Figure 1 (cartoon, rainbow, N blue to C red):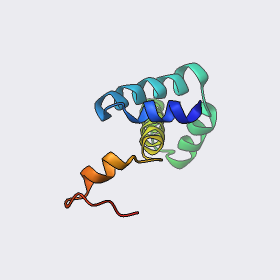
Figure 2: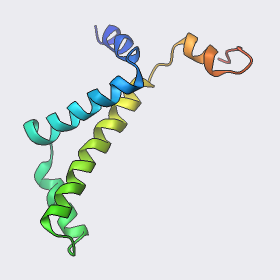
Figure 3: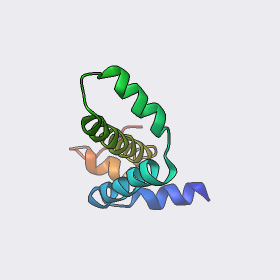
Figure 4: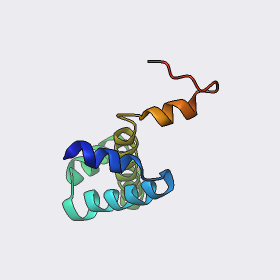
Length: 95
């Protein structure tokens, strides 16, 4: 079942993938609150000169980066043979 989901997930174009990534970032940050307190406190310690507004901008950017990297990595876990053929200039696939 998971394998089928990953195959379907890989068919999503990159433009749509980043929309999905933004939705995931919102879900992790605002709804689930994944490590929200830890991230905020660590950023306050790392940047004591920044005010609360600046720290919150960095927190939002952290969640966006986390979701972008996660979805990019998931998409590239199992490249299919067609993508490999297209990516090679001479059309040969090296295994």
